[in-house]
Image (cartoon, rainbow, N blue to C red):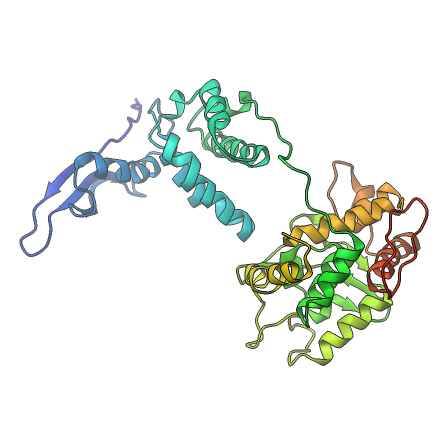
Length: 386
């Protein structure tokens, strides 16, 4: 006759030490491969680290949860314990930038308010009211809700909880303000204030719509000089190389001859020109920091040019606006910007670059790089001084 396994609470005691501080010791049973139950112990920490038993129990719960994961029990679990399990089991599978964003949101917003709560105690209306009380942008609140929902889904997969109350939490998205977009004149004024390689970086950003992490992740082998295409294969965030944001981000892009000439000038002035070398390598040959470039070079140049506040994504928004102003086919815009869609395989297309996409991209490059741009009816382009 088999007996039903019980939730193992273990025993937490204070153990005296003569030469060092007293410690908290946790004693529990462990079942060996032969089926024998053996008594084990583990030091949780010192009294300096955890002055009270309640402090030690909060840390201990994470280990106790892992100790009982092989069985499902009607045992209350706190959100803190679930978050620890999510970080340990699932977070490492995500892109580095996503990992950092999730850890920051968990540490700054979710854990301080909900960490000590049992999973069954967290209710949709309470979470909804909490999100409403935060002085954050609607998009940030949507991201918090999505992460909260993701953590609960992790708990469901591991059978730590049956339901997900965050699925009933309502949070409207949208932006507080319209994203900043630069005019053609402002782009040219900014370029005049920049020297290589930062001028080339901005050209790539505004003529191809690449994200900052993708620009930092460009290598010379990504450029095909014969058919003038660029294949975005990776991104770099905080010096760490990872995948692109989505699968659609890896599609080939047309490189206009004017932009190809800028790449060639960059290569001539670089000490690192191998196929696996970074296009915008630092002196040591490694990838540069997008945050440092923005704060030390791009923003000061924008101030000198008198165009105000900018960010890396300003160039991507500007590229998108110029495509729309040129009445480029919506499908071509989506492919040039490499946005993923819910459509099936027709959107995950071959690496070939159509002439329609090349013509649309060349139109934007011509506007940015020409000495004088004549105003075109219905396109919204400005006349620039020669």
